[in-house]
Length: 95
Image (cartoon, rainbow, N blue to C red; front, side, top):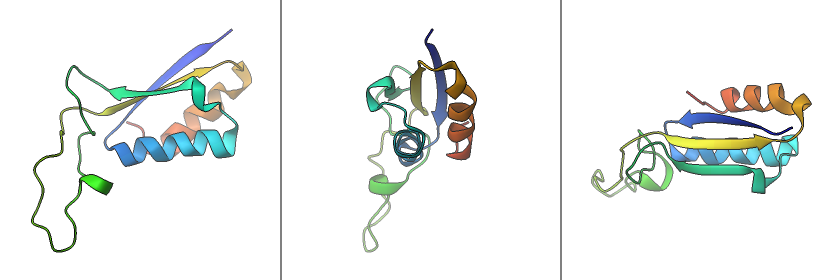
């Protein structure tokens, strides 16, 4: 039986790091992981990070769509991996 686990991240970078952790270290299939804005507007999260941040000589950017957290949803098909997935998401910075 499949179970869906959802967690929210303040930045797109945190969400991407969590996905890589699940795929590379814990054997979760990438096709079982889904990413979306946690609201009706497109969003890169609640905080600026990574490619959204200003370059060293650039003034602060204001074009990042900081509307809502990034939602990561994982379909876990192996009940024995539920706790592992939840711990990995918390370790990666999930809210």
